[in-house]
Length: 423
Image 1: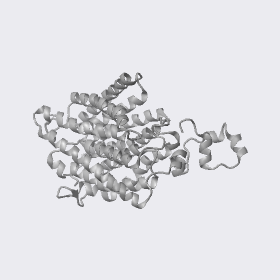
Image 2: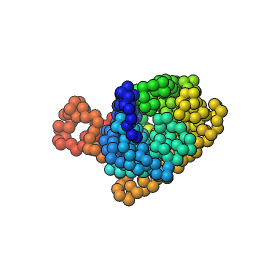
Image 3: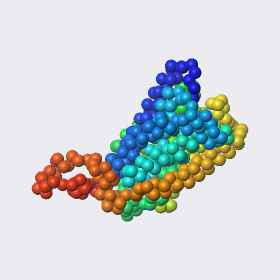
Image 4: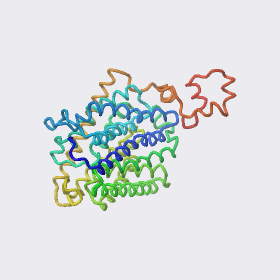
């Protein structure tokens, strides 16, 4: 992307948006970290935090060139000269995408295998798909619309997550022992940070402080708000209680659903997209997962895979050139071609995610052990993989005399002594 005349206002907006999108990944760390059991909170947070470093390095050295360089037969890109604000902004998209996958296999993957899988997945799955849609590849030429990542980010990560959780198998004790979120305030904090950062995610994709950014801002807010309400209402009718956890999950579902459409649809359709997104994602999490029996730990597929799929299809229904002349009219505005392009792109994203993730998974198994040992899962991934425990205050408080009398205590034993009922 060559630099032309620099508009300082637009540049400032893109850089601020890049910072907002960066903040989403630590927000995801809190969101996912609060959803797991206390013995796995650090390992879960580490998945998101480490990705910031590893994928940023990959993006700067390799990824940007592959995605936005000169096109080679519609498949991948060669070298180009990037405009640095755009590089920074897109870097944060590359960072958060594989972080979303981690919600599907939380609490049972070894860290080394996770890091290797993530690096290979970013290079060979994310980069090509981003080029196909955003870098002038064959899906862009087909007419696919993805304003901020429904196809590239949410379908790709959610379906890859489902693939990996099926290949890894269920967590030890899944379906037999409680596996409840250990810290709901942390979940709500993470969801709130995600909601805040998502304005940079979607409105920032206008690449300027302009009317299109304003449209994306309001459609993002409308969809998230309505989805939170529709999820809570579904939960209330289904289980008899409106939960905080449901409200947090619902807002994220609405954010996911509007992402591909935010800069292509008007505010009223965004309300419908959010309303349906909250209902569809709730059913995927509360009904589909239960009936199918797969262990998608933190509902990466149910929210991101399903929500992204709905959003991509909805873009083909309600997109309008009156909102964005660079887009296309959808089915409800007189053109079926856009919907057809969206459906083809969804199929391509699913195929790439399933086949690519499976191939990379089996390649990683040739190099290292992927699944944690049963004893590690029982003790907790924090101790087993990182030698740390998130909550150590009891060592120096109520149980101090016990530990002093017992002598030096190993990290796993200390965990066993201090574990609560949700450990």
